[in-house]
Length: 65
Image (spheres, rainbow, N blue to C red):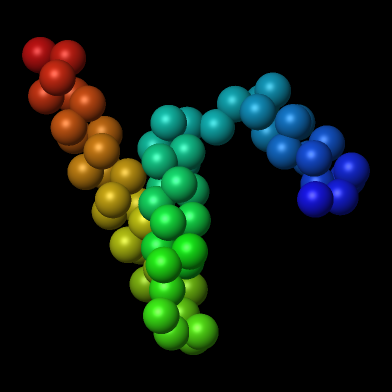
């Protein structure tokens, strides 16, 4: 990872990303790490990642009740 990329990531963290965005990023990372196909429809990948994030957020809300 380049120094510029690390600095950009640190800046994003300082500015704050939502927990939903964090969950979606982690879901996307997992999906891509386990991908059997080299081709992805990126819009579908993003949608699927956010659907996973929304499920995680809903589960968190259940636990907080």
